[in-house]
Image (tube, rainbow, N blue to C red):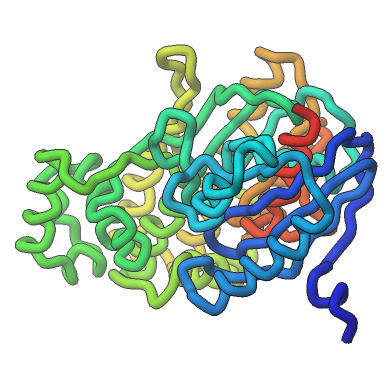
Length: 379
């Protein structure tokens, strides 16, 4: 195998020309690098999780290879704790222009570039686990009006605290019980569902005190975490061996339900302080009602996926009317969920939207570096 075969994974033809060479260092997990210049972009293979020493060593070797191509601009994620960001900030600023890029904007730009869209305004929808927002909160269910150069956050999922920070990712019961607490307060203990029966009141009291004290409870608008919470309740499972394990199980379960498209659960879409907010609280009440009525898990799972697809459609309808945009670009790892993607595409296309999805590069974080490169290059 030639050395270049190890460095290059794919080449993307861009619908424009970049005057200066850009090296994008990508995110923390599922990391890839992207070198873009002229009308082409070259992506590295997936280098893995940069917290892993072996993966980080491959990352360093790949960066050194691409630096030999003499990029003028280094693009990187906004998150200060990503190893790729730290690496970028340690490079000599005299030799390179450093260009921070917001994580979810990069998801949308990546999909736009794969679909050969020129610089134009679109409705960008990024659904993933986490990414640092410009307000230093955790984003992950974002609706933008954006092009390659700029973005404006115009709608998002209601924020809730990640009780215990990153621990909530592998202990999604923390997210689930908080949604039930918002919906029912202390009456949640009287809900006759398997998830509540397995809860420990003492553990919840610790989390509740943490929330009230504002300790280790970063607020997040993450779609990935919404899936975790719903899956924890529906499947009556507290913990996950890896990120999105329960969400993956929920998708498989919902995909087995053979039924007409149906109506899903209720949710609220409100406008507050120049922002549209999607509030799924009524959905959780609906899920609990179905579980108490012994509705099969596969039907509840399907209805949950359909509800998220309707959140997508209804929000895009509001934004189309407001901003007169009909192109919708979908990005972020949650759209790897085939059931959600199928339902979402069906609903959007029925409304006459022109929808774009990732096709040459995965929609998850492995495509972020491509987005970083084109954003920084066009700016």
